[in-house]
Length: 439
Image (spheres, rainbow, N blue to C red):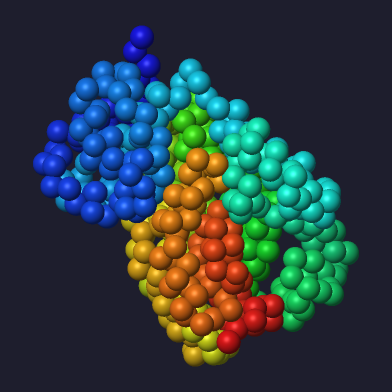
């Protein structure tokens, strides 16, 4: 039976395989191949194996590909290696999808269940017997870093803020996420009102990394934008990375409609780097979703640091930054690099007086979405991430920076440091809060 995905994206990626000249550059840069002999390398499971698949899987070792995308980025011939591997994995798992992989794709459900009882849910997930059960029955590694549910979801924060503003007051008192004083929340930079932008928070930004979403919204408002946050669901990235193309396609199309409902032609800004990648790249080039609404959203969506860098390039970003005397390490996650935007976080953070940011120089932290959560891949993910952990520890700081949520979870566990989104330092430098302890 031919199980090839009947998707335009599959044909597009497959058309690139004959450009492979077997130079081996992808293998020298693959972080997984360097960490385990279980993965024979992107060239072997990618363009080489694809010539023999004919719609069937010929080598199950391709499931050890983390999907970091480094191979595609470094290929001098433009072969879509990571995309080929992702498509082949979907074929391989079509008739035997593990329950664990289905569960890992239900991120909205996880957030909705955990957030109302966050202290209890977080405590239960830290219990040794519970982790052991998840390891042996579900296949989620007992040592893997799991998300920590926020006591206050982004939706609740927005609702509370809306009620307070309707009554003519601002939310006051300590920030529910950090316990720090929002000493300048709601204050604007004096710039003229710039119109509206849409904020795309992603699943983690709604339930787990809520503090990042709040700070991103406050920075945008400080710059003079009215921030619209329409009701929105999952982008389907976790489903796609686990081979659930049909479910992921439905998710990303539903999300596209939700984001477009806020208004036409508005820039869509997100602090979820991996989810912006799904809208910009993965849905179209891996799953082959050819839809005008997705194409429209893909064109309009910007990572928050990319958006700020664009404003600065246009001379529209206020440089009214307070000094932040610190040296902090930064890791650019693989999902961000795949969007071909450069390293906008470094561009923006370089404008803050007193701040020095050192980039890790490493391809991947090992987490790669849900890869590092899986029992059979946890040790590999830790080995892949070890060089990043070492760079962060050697920096001698208490704070580190990274743009994507699951990578922050990995770095927090691997370094025992506080790991924040880069927008947190922009938030601090604009005087919007004093919650970051810097050295």
